[in-house]
Length: 336
Ligand code: 5MM
Image 1 (cartoon, rainbow, N blue to C red):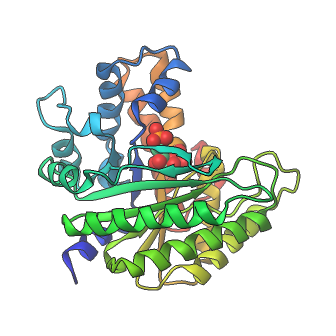
Image 2 (image 1 turned 60 degrees about the vertical axis):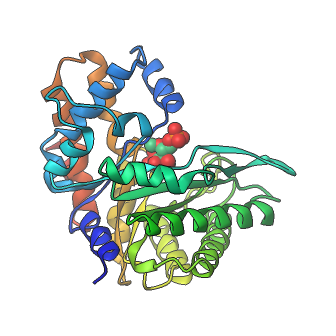
């Protein structure tokens, strides 16, 4: 087993998933503004340190994706944030893209930037304790989108990023996110997501990325958020599995879904059904941002000194996701 494969498998251990806490300062400020908490470096650290020192970190979280600011911060007990995360048995990770910018010649779409100087930044993050990295490409759905230009350029960037990350001894998380925004059907989402993922693997293979030392972070197959063509969750799970079976090479050890704007319960229920029906060798787990943090953030906003209450709220969500990653969740457990 290669070193990269063993890091990937550690992140994806049974009943564990990834906590995506890599909101850039802009996104975190929006989240904190919405709950009337000033977005200062100290407040951002306080919320994140509260989550990272929760009990469920030991049992439900295999990896944490950090933002540049957080990986360089120290905890109240003078540990570094990667030390705190490692002490719970989870692997510290880092978002290394510098954001999605307007795509030249297709201004409705985005291209993710951050390749310039990446090799040097990766060396620094490795020294700070990171052992995996994340890069997110974003795609919109409409009649004409995502365009071939967006599919090809984002896949190229994801593959060059992944090759550099492996060169620096870390596991790349490859995140092609086909957004939920719009009134498209689940079938449209299936077709476009399949095209996007296929192209990503074409480029990853061309760039000689060792797929056994990588993790895919895709969206689930869902109708657009403003579509009236809703489908049952069983169908979401089956379409998602079909899409991944047809597009992801079997060397990839695991798939960690993003929640993409689903509610906490929807994201949990859909993951649970995916695991119940999983007839592949892929480990299927979570790499949730909002679907792991939303309730905890809301609770914390009422009293930022109530560390225990915030952690209890986070622990519950993490435990529910952990059960879903094993196909053992049921709605009645939510109210226990
Ligand atoms: C945590 O949010 C990440 C994006 O932050 P920025 O937009 O500020 O860069 C995002 O990449 C996240 O990791 C994934 O989209 C998954 O998050 P959700 O909330 O969709 O599960």
